[in-house]
Figure 1 (cartoon, each protein chain N blue to C red):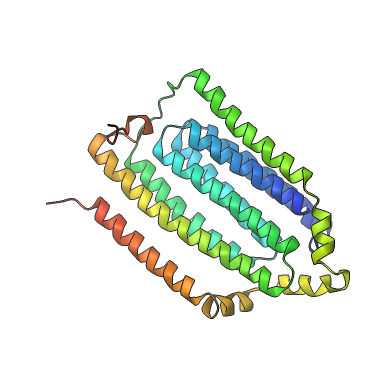
Figure 2: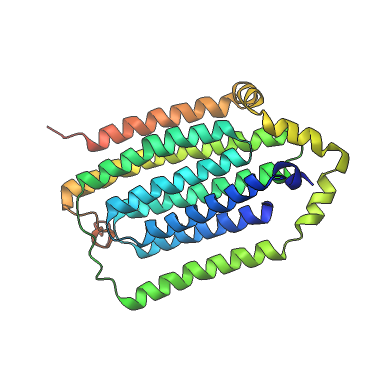
Length: 104
Length: 182
């Protein structure tokens, strides 16, 4: 268990999230993949902080950053699910291929 | 080295491998399973794995936050969204696109892994870590909650309050979005 293991884990999780965002067509699953990517970022951050954070200040600062990331992820998810429900009510579908109202 | 200080025992090593492998497997299940509900259950498993990694690295408060927000709140929200927009995912995406997309994701992963392996981590290590001070760092890792709360409410109190306002705005915005107009 060194910093490199955490970097690898973070890279793999982020790539899986990227694949989910690009390959799946349900808007809810795209949101879930975005949450995966945010978790990968958090793993990366906590790995750096625990293995390379010199002193208490930096270690705690990393944890503060992760708390903000988690909070903003929660806010983003709430708004995105509200938007998805609204679109579902209007179009009766959450398929992202059919969301082309803004297309000129 | 600090990594030896944190992960000296065999138990920690074994639990790291178990947690990380199960996290990766459940993440693969999330992006591969057709049924959205089962995918969300595997997403909860992934969140639990990340919480376990937080505990392994001495961030117990973050693990609690992860359990409360991700496992407790976000997964419930996602399951509600799936139940309200119940729809079987149609897999009529062309084979060519799927291969292209997996190539992009795989290419990103290989790029990240090559960057990680080509970086000289020991150089950074010896520059920022005098050998005699590692014990102190490990000691602070073990008990970070008092410092965390002090820091959050003194030095970063402005960001803390702004995040609170942001959450309030997001909740009000979500309510305004889903409200039926009379």
